[in-house]
Length: 75
Image 1 (tube, rainbow, N blue to C red):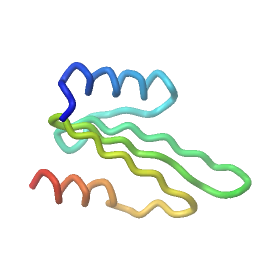
Image 2 (tube, rainbow, N blue to C red):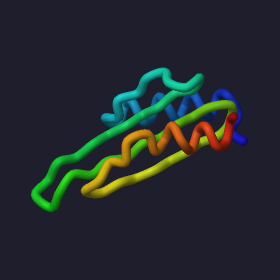
Image 3 (cartoon, one colour):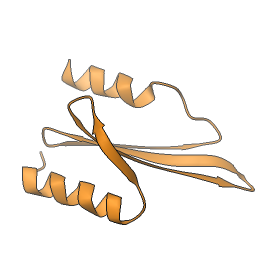
Image 4 (tube, rainbow, N blue to C red):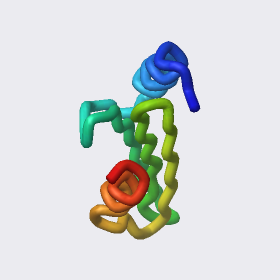
């Protein structure tokens, strides 16, 4: 489990390095996406109650994927 100050530091670092961070599902979600010649890809980081969920995708962005993971862990 991440300590609250560590969780806040991770979110701050992600925001400082170009991720779009916002409140979602009682936590903080940070995402970044790339569209390059090889295709579309991105990363999502979700922080809540000491838990860090990180996913990466390439050429497909499954709708609701992070929401489903959060629901499985927290509900």
